[in-house]
Every structure is written in structure tokens, then in C-alpha cells.
Image 1 (cartoon, rainbow, N blue to C red):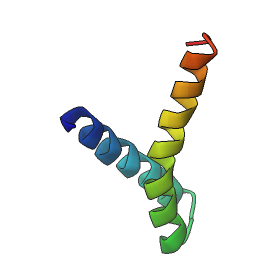
Image 2: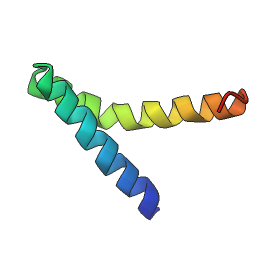
Image 3: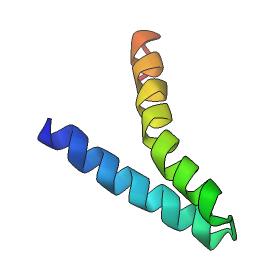
Image 4: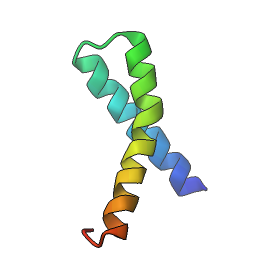
Length: 53
């Protein structure tokens, strides 16, 4: 639980900073920082399932 929470906090913050740095508006920054970490975890799970990671 603790590792997942830390991952979501760090990944969400980095994604939000990147989106904000690229000039996205506040709603897009919130959406990206909320959805982004879950998408990254899904991508890693798919790559592991396919044996590519």
C-alpha cells in the first residue's frame, strides 16, 4: 500500500509539472496527473505479460 501511494504521488506530481510546463490549463493538469499514473502501471503490466519487460 505504501509503495503504491508513494508511486502515485511522485508520478502524479511529475506528470502535473510536465503538463504545466508545456502550458496546459488547470483542468488538463489535474486530469493528466490523476489518469497518468494508472496508465503507466497498465502499460508496465501489459509489457510484463507479453514478456517484453
